[in-house]
Image (cartoon, rainbow, N blue to C red; front, top):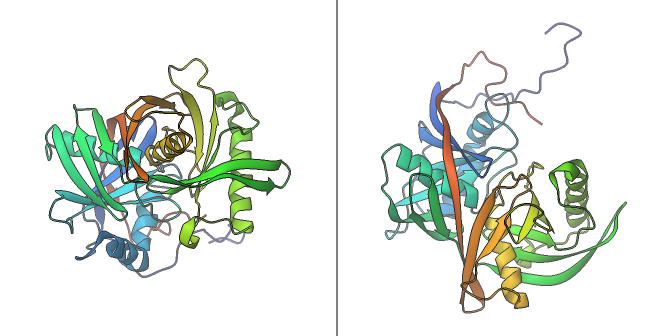
Length: 329
Ligand code: PYC
């Protein structure tokens, strides 16, 4: 380092990374997924929630190396396929991003299926996939299209008022769709591409307020996704959303788990009947088609979307590279 160079935001550790990791990248409605194909960490056996904890406690350097810049980005979601614990499943998967680990990931699941089909590892038809938050039934419908029958989803609280600094009262619902969401139906802002900076700012403020005021989901779990809704505008859809993900980036897709949480709210309000189609547009105009069925006091959401493979590569990790573990933010 020269005197005028800042301390690099590198991660100082002696933890080992393989020299190369093979990945396939795709996007689902604009939101990228990176599937680890070879040389991922060996998380051993056992329930997926325990293997996710092991990923976090023993291999978090792997997550950072694969997801953070310069090899990845804040928008990217990683998918590590693992052997299932539940014998009814053909596959398990753990999703991760720039901030940590996800319960489920709807766009990521569609990306995973399309990627595995691209590699010739699965054929069109039904595939049952285990995640740390439950089993997701899936149907690969074509080379690019899949439907996921998500984990049971529900609304935990309706009409929660947050006093957001610089904004005032913001009313939202708290719902589970495989991750926890704070959903704001009337956010007082146009939910349009042109208004992106303002939506990002508002969602940041809402997330900060949830954290500061200790507003949590049942059991004290952190609500780490914020979802703002508006009219669909010129897109053929019922609604358009802006979804802030846990690491601060916004979801380019309509967010599979966020759409599941939305369906749970619509079902609880009685404004969407079981089996009726809800078309959810994202802030960039991509659309998921969704419906639900009741199962006791939860709903079972069904989300259909399209994904496309964008690249296949070997990520390289050189021990001499100060940024082999990613640029720390
Ligand atoms: O599609 O469920 C989803 C998702 C979660 C975070 C990013 N995408």
